[in-house]
Image (cartoon, rainbow, N blue to C red):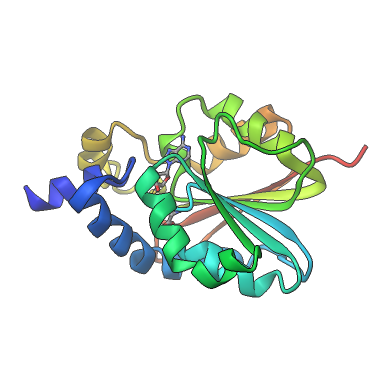
Length: 211
Ligand SMILES: C[S@@+](CC[C@H](N)C(=O)[O-])C[C@H]1O[C@@H](n2cnc3c(N)ncnc32)[C@H](O)[C@@H]1O
């Protein structure tokens, strides 16, 4: 029962269980996020966006990576925005980090704003994946990159591995090929995917074409 209350709050954290979930995500997603970021060339001066920023741990990490740059975080959960603001208080105060409540489907940014965009363990919940990816592409600079990170990769050898959580949260584990196709259909180019042996982790990187 407690476990169910906790997992249900991965979708849009609220209240007591949401706070516990945020704490657990900040801790539990550290390793996969650090692994994925090793494939993402975040540079000094970059303007970066974290979509579905949860408790703000990735925003915090990116603030170090961008040096003189700037990091934005968005999440549609009011509680996540509050917790991300708390965790990144110093960087928010000096305007190096900006955290806003927003849905991926309607990002409150101009076209061609970001050098890099990351989305960790959130894509499963996006309501209209193809159009949401097109919305992400819109705010990415030409030549900029999006990274999607997943810990629920479908396993051919163990097809029921994720069934319980899929049913409970009404989501689906991802297949590498489907993610590649989706990114391509949304207009991304130079798509690369990475997996880590012994885990069910996947990260995918796509680029916005330079005209
Ligand atoms: C499993 S949590 C991951 C949080 C964080 N990225 C991390 O790795 O710890 C999923 C997050 O995505 C957010 N989210 C889900 N759907 C969203 C949407 N349509 N737009 C913005 N955020 C969304 C949730 O509120 C939640 O904070």
